[in-house]
Image 1: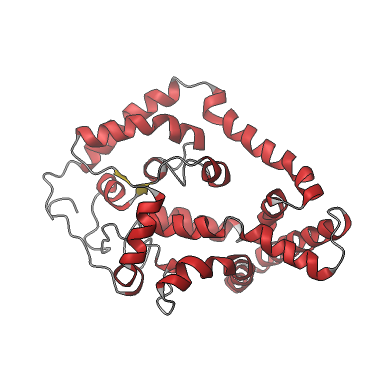
Image 2: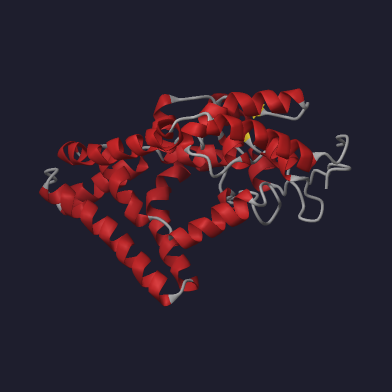
Length: 294
C-alpha cells in the first residue's frame, strides 16, 4: 500500500492548529464543565441505584475494583496510544482468545469480565511497588465489600447468594458492548510493525474506527470511546465533550487530505467479526507497510 509524501508532521501540525482554534473559542463549560456534570450526575445516581439495586450500583463500586492508575497509564497511554495497532505493543492483542470459538467469545465470554477483572488486577500487583500494591489491594477489597454490604443492608437482598448474584448481574449489564467496542475499533484495521510504523497522523487515521452515537453507550463509556475514538487517539488530552465538538473539524480535515476516516455501525462490525472471526481473532494479522510514510 502506498501513499504519497512524507508530510505526516506537517499534516498533524495543521490539524492541531485547527483543533486548537476550536478549543480556544470554547467556554470552560464546554471544555470541562459538561464532563464534570455528567460525572457528578453519575455519582448522585448511586444512592437511587442502591435503593433499586440497578446498574448504578455496579458502576459506582466497580471503580474500586479495577486496575491501578499506574498500570492503566502504562497500558493505555504509553502503549496503546503511542503504538496504536503496532504488533506486540498497542495492537489490542490482549483481547484475543484464540482457543474460544466465535459464538462463545462474542456471546458468552463477556459474562466473565466481572469475575476476571479483579483477578487479573490482583495478579498485576506482583509487578507493582509494595506501597502501590497495598493501596490497590485495599481499594479492590473496599469496592467489593462495600458493594456487598450495600446490597445486603440498603438494597434489601435477603441472602448472601442473592447479593452475590446481584453483584454479578449489575457488573455484567454492559460487559458485551465493553468487549465488542474494544475489538471493533482497532482489530481488523491495518496493523504495523515497530520498524515500519507510519507517522502518527497516518497511524491514527488508518488504525482507529468510530462507531455511531448510541445514547446508552455514550453515557456509559463516553464519546471518546464510541463515536469520537479517532479524535481521542489524535488528541488524548481533550475532554470527552470537546472530542465531540472537534469531530467535524477532524473528519473534514482528513477527508480534505484524502486520508481515511473510518466509521462503521455496531451491527455491521458485529456481523463482520462473526463472519471473519478466524482471520481477525485467531490468525496472526498481516502487517501493512506504507511506503514513504515511516
